[in-house]
Image 1 (cartoon, helix red, strand yellow):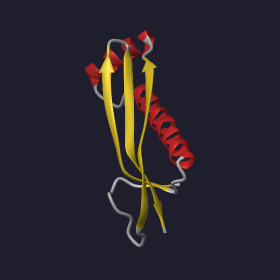
Image 2: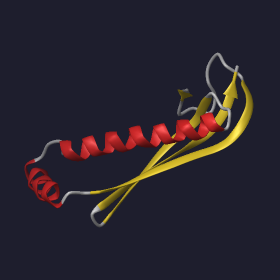
Image 3: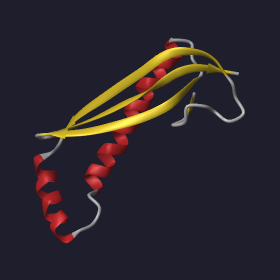
Image 4: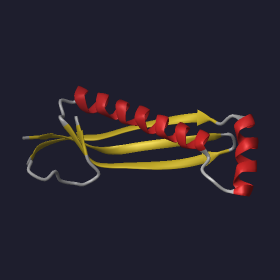
Length: 103
């Protein structure tokens, strides 16, 4: 499955639009990791635990979107976008795009 953030795919024509595909993942944050991350934010540097959690969320969202697109008969997703929101003790990653058939 070809997935792009652009609305078109160079070298391909969109033959049919199958519709929007969406997926989301809500993960709870670990209070122990929050405390350590809070300390890390004082001295600076990457919060690796959160980076790993975000990467895992992106993988899961893309897998779910691909499944939806395949079920509709699509062979590509265009216009992929992600949105992230954080609440008390949770984070939610939402992905959306348009399932299409390309030549």
